Length: 230
Image 1 (cartoon, rainbow, N blue to C red):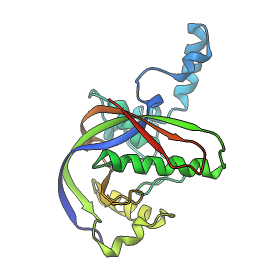
Image 2: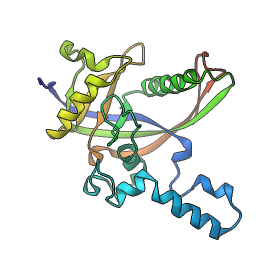
Image 3: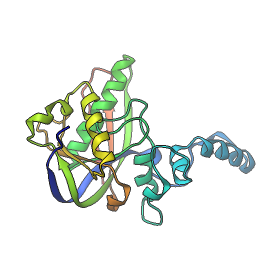
């Protein structure tokens, strides 16, 4: 398989949106279900036994080694979660066994990507009611040589709007050959501004929180409404 060219990327302030319920370390949603500390402890132990980030950080996930994850740095739990949680069907440039850090070069790009997937979820069940999603923005800086498929006609299939088959195959080849990740044009934003998928947790640097964001859909067929909170 022909591989994409490598771009020596120096990109600050990339934007990743994380659901706000996952943003705060140590604040389990189980806390509001129980009244006593003992009950919370037992439920938390059960939660920990099935929490992919905690499993990964203890070396019990097959898709990623504990030695690849980050510890002792600010927002380590946010970085590690990106690589230890993966959708059953995977993402554009990752399979179901290992995640990646996806980010847009601008907030508008990250916003469009997230809103598309939320809209698709609502459409699949024809949700008739208003739905509100809350996110926290995380910024990160990158200094590494990324494989770059922007303006590369031979990798056009990796940007298909309805299938990840080709893009996941490319990502698997690159991952096994030591690639740090892929830079690509957004599929969901009309102007197709740049995104990246980073394969290596240690290259996600200078992570810090940004704005909070609310995405509202009046129903499954409605256009998203974005409200940013500083």
